[in-house]
Length: 212
Image 1: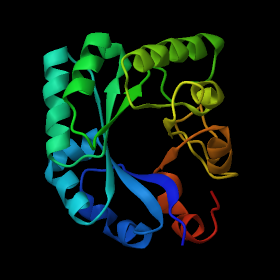
Image 2: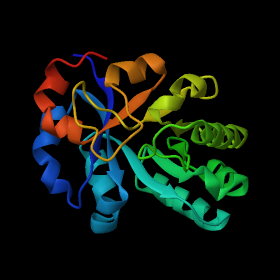
Image 3: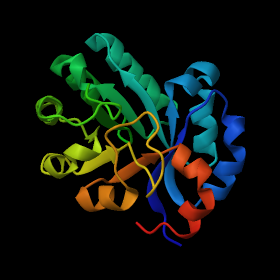
Image 4: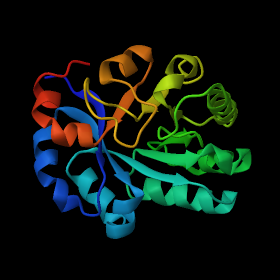
């Protein structure tokens, strides 16, 4: 059985609400994503419980603060067992370097551009993403959260690329404009995909039929 390169997004306040999905997905996908809503509601215990159950955990806090605060938060994320942590590239090179230098060995830092997947593609946004990714590269960040439209260019800069905005064929795009299918994202250079509603609503298809 192959493990699919997917982070299942736990978009909600309580971990218990995802017990059914986590049981079905265990051993079939790579990991889970804990966002700000759940982390604010349940705290570090959400990450610690998932790690105890054997999951790779992507802590999506999008840190954006002064260097000392970013550094301290990065250390804390490593202490609770997070495997991946997001940081806004707009925090600046000093903050990025502080996070990189202080992180635990097993923690991977993922830079986030201000151009998120809720924004439609435009040449101006594409240029902004590229400039921010260059700064992340200079700051030796491990990888980036990359919109689907920028994958082909970004794989020339990073090996570790995590891509949201993933929708199955013929599926509603909901609030996201910069989207693609799982298959195309992997072909274009994504290392891992972030999928939430698409997994919850099509869990049997994702587990049994989706080929990546």
